[in-house]
Image 1 (spheres, each protein chain N blue to C red):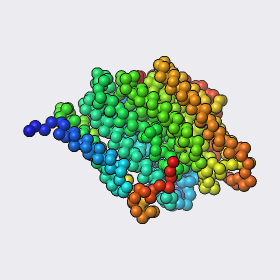
Image 2: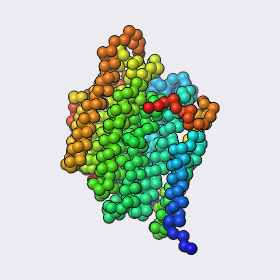
Image 3: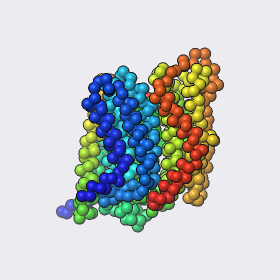
Image 4: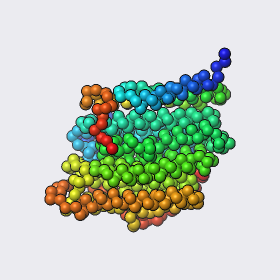
Length: 484
Length: 103
C-alpha cells in the first residue's frame, strides 16, 4: 500500500494531531494545568486553522478514489475551521464553569471529532466513506446535546436528536441500497455513469427521494425540520451555535457534492423540482414560525431553518458558481449567526435569560452587546452593506444562472421571504433599542474569550462583504475543481 | 422451489415498514429504539441481497453491511445512554413525559 496518499488529507491529519494533543493534555497533565485546557485547545486549533490557509490548493484522490480533495473542498474545510474556532473561543467561559469542569476535555474532543466526520463527508467519493463520516459527525453531536447533565431540557433535546438522526440515516441508507441495486457500485463516479440511462425509472425516483430526505434531516429542511427547534433550545448554547452553522454548512456542501456528482445527469428530470418544493417550503415555514417565537434560541432555530433554504439555492443552481456562492453563504452565515449566539451566550452565562422580552432596553445597559446583536440581525436579514446582503445577492444570481423560468419563480419567492424575515429580525433590534423597560438586564462584564469571539464575528460581518477578493477566490477555486 | 430476489426483498421491506410504523406509534423510548433497529437491519438485508443476487462478482454490499452493523451498534449504545439519563430524571421512559419543549 502506498502510504504517501495519506499526505493528501492535510486537513484531517492536522485535525487528528490537534485532537491527540488535547486528549494527551486532558489525560496526563496535572490538576492545576487542567484549567488551561480550553484556552490551550483554542490556541492549538487557531494555529491549525491559520496553517490550513497556507496550504496549496490542489486536487487529488486517495484510497483508489474513495477520498478526493479539490480547491473548493479545501476552501469549505477552511471555512468550517473558522466556524469551529469561533465556537471554541466562545465556549471557553462556559467550559470553565463549575458544573462543566469534570468533562471539560470531553467537550472539546467530541467537538473536534464531529468536525473530523464532517471533513470526511465533504471529501467522500464513495458512499461507505460518506456514511462513516455522517455518523462520525452526528453521533458525538448527540452526546454533546446531552451535555448539560443537570438540565432536563438537555436530555429531552438529546433523545429527540438521536432518534431523528438514526431515523434519517436509516431512510438515507434504504435509498442508498436502491442506488446500489441500480448501479452495482458505491463509487460516486461509477454510479453517475450508470444511472444516466435510468431517467424514467421509478426506482431512481424513490432512491433520490430517500437520499434527499436523509440529507434534509441533517440540514433541517421542511418537512424534516421538526427536531430543530427543540434541540436548539435544549442543547447547551455552544453546541447550538455549532449545530446551526458548522454542521449545517457541512451538510449543505455534502448535499451539493452528492446531488451534482452522483445524480447530476438526472438533474432536470428528477431532483430539480424536488428541491424546488423543499426550498419554497423551508424558507416560508421557517420564516412564519420564527415570527411567533419568544425564546431567542428557538427563534434562531427557525431563522436557521429558513437560512438552510437559502443555502440550498446554491445546490439547485447546479453549476460551479453555485458551489462558490454556497461556500460564501456558509462563511457569512458563520459570522452572522455566531455573533448572535455570542451575545446570547454572554447574556445567558451572566444572567440565565434567553427570552426576547428580557432583551428589552438592553441598549441602555449593554450598548456593545446590543450593537453586535444588531449587526448580526442586519446581516442575517440581508441589509447592505453588511456581508449578509452580498451572500444573498450571490446565491440568488447563482440560482438565476440556470436561466429556467422555475428558477426565476424560486428566486422571486425567496426575495419575498427576505422581506418577511426582515420583520422578525428587526423585532429583536426593536426590543433592544426602542422598547422601554424599567429594569433591563444589568451591565454585563463579559469574559475576554466571548469578547474576542464577538470581535472576530463583527469584523467578519463588516469585512467579508466589502473585501471582494474572498468571493473571487472562492469562485476561482470552484472553477478549478471540475465538479460539474 | 427456487428462491429469487423477491423472497428476500419483500420481508425486508415489510421489516422496514414495521420499523417506521413502530417509530411513529410507540410510546416507550426502548420500543422506539427497537423499531429503529428493525429499519437499520432491513437496510442491511437489502444490501446483502442485492449483492448476492444482482452483483455476485464483488463484495461491496457485504462490506457496506459490515460497517452499517457497527454504526448501528454505536447508535444503539449512545441512545441507550441517553435513555438512561432520561430515566434518572423523570423515572420512566415514556415519550409522553418529554413534552416540555413544543412548537
